[in-house]
Length: 83
Length: 476
Image (cartoon, rainbow over all chains, first blue to last red; front, side, top):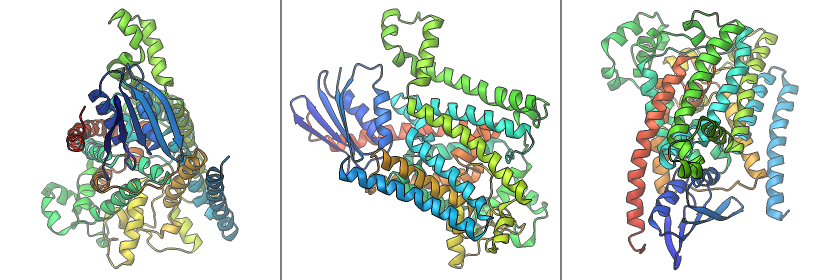
């Protein structure tokens, strides 16, 4: 299973990094945010707890905004809006 | 509380009770087991702290170079300063368990190999242990790879002897080691006895002509000059290059580059407290690490021993004790040596004579893992991390993907080799040494940072390649 990239609908993209440890989820999130357009939404799914801290910190001071964080049973879904 | 969450909490309680039962029943059987239990409970605390703070040395410089996140460098520096403050007290009272290591270019090279390895593997030696406790199969593979590589590496001879410089060979032969060790055969043996042991040993206190067993020597020499100043310098560099632009984003936009000293001090402080979890974990880790030195040395004094080998003999187990009667018993937090030992023990049981080398045969031994104090510490570390992850609903069994398994094995092998060349990992060769005023720790750290930088460069290329492949069908 590799990291999965998909387009959910217009302007909404998904990135599934489940099963991946550091630094994959944060690196792929960073690169994906660089590729999508301003105002687009990125939904990142991962299950590596330390990536939640890294992704949150990574977005401090950037124009991107975390809209919501969903955490359940070791699975994290972050919705990020590109600024 | 839903049913799944209640089940996880029950598991957490079960793990704590399991360790408590081991401590109580072994103590009831023979009081000397308390020495092993001391290691166990410190390991448990380390595991809880590491998981809570997501404390991973690999992420410190990797996340800085890869995604510009400084939180882990900050956490580690907080921990190292706290650890230094506590251990300086132990050093000043003359009961420290710490011995500085020979320093030289080998410390930097070892750190570099280790640094590349930890980025590839996705975690350092201690990080992989705590992530195993979170249920990560990849982290477990990393631990296995570090363990097997080390125990093999310390015993390789034959063709590898041809790679040993003659000066190392001659110097090693002149050390007068027992015949059983056969020091002329084995790359690592000749590296240790013929090169490393000939390198200088010092502490910052001693280099400044201060007595380290004095409060001024320990606190001014080792802590202030050896830890606080370099740590502050490192954090200032991190703030200037990575922290300022992000933390003061709004101010930077308004004032461009004309920020006042006051603005910068506020920004620096913001960086220090930006991740409370990591800072709190660093705080507790630092204090616990210093306390462990105090407790273990206290037990040694109480039982009139210098090494756990004597404890094992009193318990009635002399299997795998080194030729000098010792086993690995650092007296403080350590990770990799005990990982080499348990595989070494299995290999020995399977018929491989690996007691004819310095690492196992002369210094650390290969005691039964069930009676190895350092193994108790590592297993409890995994347990402590599992408890914390279960309590926070972050535990999940994760099978390694084929890609990650490959990186885990390669990264783990590089960390295993780096650890043996540097006489320790990110904990034993960096964290503990730096906190105790040993310059060898910073040299290993410099290598580790350079290794992390190269590892990140490679990973950036790799992930771009993967993305291009996976996103070919996606129109963005």
